[in-house]
Image (cartoon, rainbow, N blue to C red; front, side, top):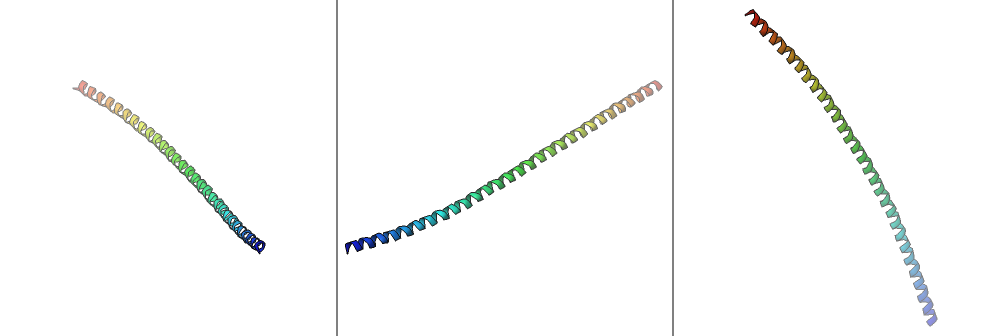
Length: 107
């Protein structure tokens, strides 16, 4: 009777252990799948952010370059306008001086 009880207890424990082991394995495999999925999602997010950052950086560089080209062009235009105005002013001053001296001689 005692050996029958012992065998029954052992077989019950074996069934419990098999069931518990199966549950643990299922939990571990579920966690592994979850972890693989989360890792993949994290990698995709990092890659997406990297692409976004690369794109934003490129856009910023292009904007700075465009502004630099605009500024160089505008500066060149301003310099040309100033030098044209200077030449005009020198010419006008010379013409005014000639007119004044001609008028003085006439007078």
